[in-house]
Image (cartoon, rainbow over all chains, first blue to last red; front, side):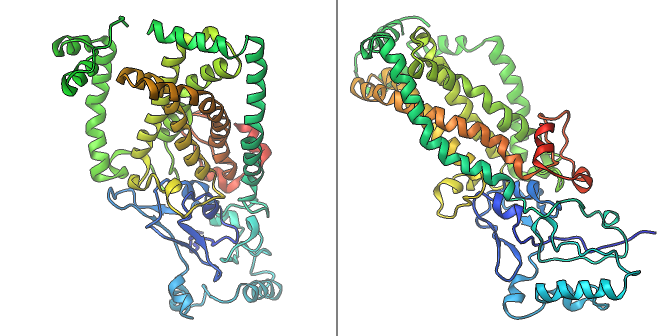
Length: 205
Length: 249
C-alpha cells in the first residue's frame, strides 16, 4: 500500500544550507523557520547540494532571476502570531504547529499511548542535531523516503575542523616559506645571483 | 618569439597598434593566427557561443540537465574542481624559483605564470555560466554580508586574491611590453611577496575545493567518482561519516 507524507524543509536547528551559504542568504530565525533572501543569493546552489534531505528546489528555467524555492514555515505569519497556512487549513490536524518542546512532549505521549499505532521514534528530534519539523509515522521512516541513520551530529560540525586549520596555514606558511627562501638564497650566493637571473630573462626576451 | 627593438614612443595610436600587432602588419598578424590549434578552437567556439547565448537568455534549464537532486553538474566538476588544478604550473614554477632557489628554471617563469593567471581567470569566467545569478559573483568578497562559516566563502576569497597574486607576478612582462621601466622595476620587487602569498592561498584554495564535500557525506561527484553520481537515494540509506567519505574519495 502506498504511504504519503508532506515532504518539505526540516528547518534544522543547525542547518547545513545556512552554514554553506557564502553570502548568508539563508538564515535560521529564532522562531525556528529557515528563511531565504533571494536579493543576496548568487545562485551557486551549494545549499541544495548540502541539504541532508534534498528538499531545496531551484527555478532552473529562469535566466534573469532564478531563486531557491523552499518552505519558510510561513515565517511572516508566525511573526504576526499566526499559524503556518498548512497547519491552519489541515482538516484532520495531521499537521500541527506549536512550541517545539511542547510538540516533542506530545509526540512521545502519543507514541506511549498508542504503541501499536506509531513507530517508536520522533523523526527530526535528534536527526543531525534535530530540527523544527517533526514526523510521527505508522510505517518505518525508510518507507517515507526519509534518510535514517543521519546520526545526531549537526552537519556544520563536519567542516569546522578544516575551517579552524585555515588561520593556522595563513599565519605559519609565510614564515616557513620565507625561511626556506632565506636558506636557499644564502646558499645560492644572495640577491646578486637573483638579479642576474632576472636580467638574463629580460635580455633573452 | 623573434627579438625586436621596441619602437620609440611616438604618437600614441600608431605605437599602440604596433605593440598590439607585435610589430607585424595587420594582414601578417591575421595570417599568423591560422594554426591547427586555432582552427580547433574556432570549431569549439562555433558550438559553444550559441549554447552560451541560450544559457544567458533562457536559463540553465534550457542548456543543462541539472535538477533539484543534482544541482552541481559536470561543468563544476570538470571546470572548477579539476580545471583549476591545471593552472598550478604558475604556482609550482614560481615557488621553485623564488622560494626554493632553483634559478635554472627562470627562463620558463613567464609562460608558467601566464598560464596560471589565464587558468584561474577562465575558471572565474566559466563560473559565470554556472552561477544562477552571475551578476552577484563579487558578492561574497565585496558585500558586507558574509557566510563566514562557508567553505565556498573562502574559495571565493582565495580565487580573488590568488588571481591578484598571479597578475602581480605577471605584471613585469606587461610593463615591459608597455615600456614602463619604473613600474616594471617596482613590480619585480613585489614578485617574492606575491609568490609567497600565492603558495599560501593555493594551499588553502585547493584543499578548500575538497573541503566543500565535508558537508556532504555520502554524496559523490563526477569526475572524482566514476561517472556523474550525486546520489540522493544513497543519501537516504547510507550512514554518513567522515571516515567513509574519505575512503570513497
